[in-house]
Length: 288
Image 1 (tube, one colour):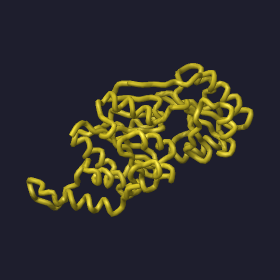
Image 2: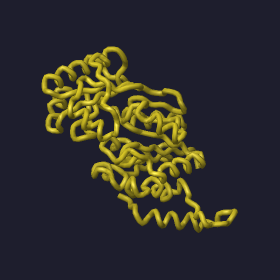
Image 3: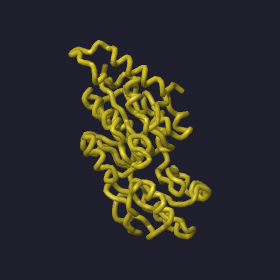
Image 4: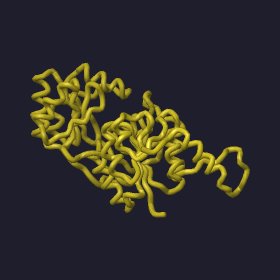
């Protein structure tokens, strides 16, 4: 068997609703690494927002900012900055409508407004502090993604005016601003090329709307049991939820990792533990 890679979304996949990583997910990553399988984070977050997670899991490859900033084994291999003139126009229109914008580079997120209720609500759900305010941030550095803070019904106004962008909703009051054609799938393509891994040997776990392209891009897309309906429809397989060992069960089902019975004293595996863990995993998962 050739090289393999597993892409893992963060919020709703590796992390639970409290933004805490269940022990089974830590174990799943460790088992992958012990088998020499690349474990790669694929998230809409900026790198600085999950640096502590990478350190805890000893992961050095990631697709961040929804494919806009990609790192393989500690080295940046792809970036795709947004035209600052377009961000300027979006910012002015948002201000005129009482909406707000945030700007993301690889090190920070800066907001256009102080104490905007939509920004506060969205960041509270992420268990993160309100971002610093810097209305000129997009003029001073490369920006890889914007955030638009508005009601979902107002999003169409921006979609009609800025047709070269996708507005991908991740919260009731927030949507990512990305160039058309950009997604986690683009970053995955870059990682597979750098790692010399065939598409059929790649897997991805996700749960949200920004995971749809990723689940379709890999050889096997796996949706979490708690995923949105669109993600489940885009996947090849649905595992258990993020709080019920969904990642570990999915990995066991596809034979990527094994879970030995802790009470087993055998020095050489007879295969019974492996088959039992696979049967147990199948109780909560199913193919689409």
